[in-house]
Length: 434
Ligand code: KE4
Image 1 (cartoon, helix red, strand yellow):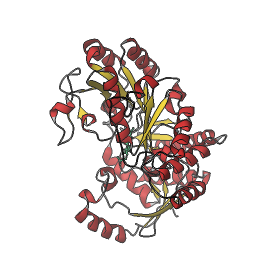
Image 2 (cartoon, rainbow, N blue to C red):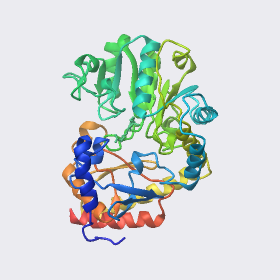
Image 3 (cartoon, rainbow, N blue to C red):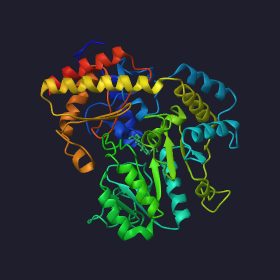
Image 4 (cartoon, protein in one colour):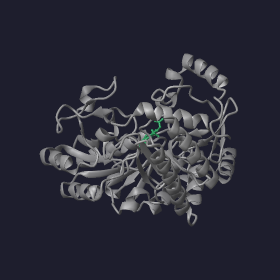
């Protein structure tokens, strides 16, 4: 790869994108992939290996999206691939219990002791939806509280935004979501414990749960303010409201035991996804036994799934977690991520570009604003046009970042020091061009 490479060839991607748009809404199976917030031609990926993506036009990229988080060991990690191949030779789905589900459930519970019982499903959305249903069933209350800028998948009532006043019930944030569904969702600014206290005071008897990303990574990366999580835990405990940690991104990413281990908080329910499937479709939710035992077939809260606990996804997840248990994995990820963040920050400063950086372990954020960024209201002040320019200059130099200012960058164990050095050089060029 060369810095300031000539404009890349993207003819095959363009042709495929034109075809895709005839068949698939927006030409993609998940909106952010369409590059709409950064413009330009989405790259159709042919294969991936380690820290690299290879597109259909023969271009190579150092990948910091990592399939939005799952590929913490890098793409096509040899032991994961051989595990999947072996599992596939035994069949791909049985619709019956397997030992693999028991093994993964035990590994999850060992890493997350708060998850006394675990249910495996096929996506983060499904896991969040189910966790909220069991929270409502357990408390016999209908309302939920979430935070602006946190994303928890696309179930109807989580596509709700704050109503007019702070304590008003939510209004739909997507066409097709009935007002009746959204109205049970209250929304407050992230990191605003006073706003939560206010709502709990007014609505405590209607609130089933409070759900949040303990490290917000869907508005860009916004860490929890000091003591925010602890205060939230105290408040929910005092008012018999369930606390749900959505660790679909942070789980096994920021520590083997996720954000709840990092911050020493015990939520009532936890949602996982991404890394625990090693890149195959997966989600999981779990928590206190007395809550989880309400779930069918044991109890009256229904949840089911054809491919729940799929043997290939279980095998890939088990192997991925085995690799992550190896000594020093998270320290290496931390050191590489710190070096990358420092290099990017120094390059921005040298170029006189205002940049607010955030990072927890190998989840990195950078807002094109002078900051500070503590919630959605401050995150959305970022210069998204400038982010788009930066994104494209990096892409042309073979560095693949998230095609949106409001996502995260991830590192894997496959990213080398040379990759980090190259990325910093590419960023130096990109900042100068802004
Ligand atoms: P999935 O249904 O996409 O597996 O998970 C939904 C979800 C739940 N909770 C959190 C904290 C999440 O970040 C996600 C999904 N993350 C996005 C990226 N920010 C997935 C990428 C996409 O939507 O294409």
